[in-house]
Image (tube, rainbow, N blue to C red; front, side):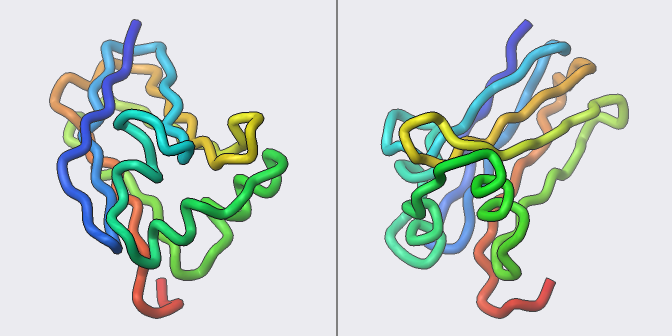
Length: 123
């Protein structure tokens, strides 16, 4: 069982990954500056990259960073109605943000994961 995350669009305000899964798997996308998919490596210099460099000491801090900031928006666009994507945030143990994506059903059409830095705090 495997999930693939391929970077399809990036800027200083947006990261977009195409996700495919054959079901029952998980993938981690870290902000550690490693090879793609990596939130820090894939982001161009700017406000989104500044957020991705924030130190994360615990799962609570990771969730606050990923889901609690008013100008950071993480969304899925499903192409396969049966795909059941879940996302959680934590730390990779070295102080970097880690997003963990799971999909219980196969998604061969490829859903989109969007990570956006909004110019305003409006959601």
